[in-house]
Image (cartoon, rainbow, N blue to C red; front, side, top):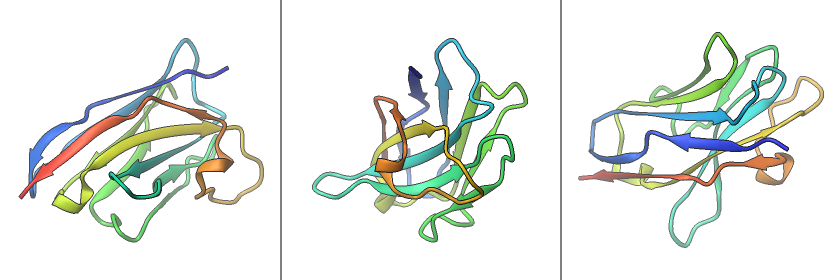
Length: 126
């Protein structure tokens, strides 16, 4: 069982930045593919970014490309989502998810991930 804990959400003005963190309790995320998703009220959960296990290659949704960056710390214990140039439409609950996912693919759908954090609220004011 992998327990994920997100942190770093909050209220920010449009154009501002936030950095979200996703840590696994008591273990590293070295071999895990980790994804960030977001869900706004009344909408489906949406893919944001993913970083593959071991290889650390990344893929980012077009809607946030050039503004959001996913990365992993050297100790492989934490995955970050750096969010710059935030817009009001980025307002959502942000979730991190992890899984031991095979192959060289990028996994973009929530059901493909086995473990989820509790979510952290990001609110961008105009």
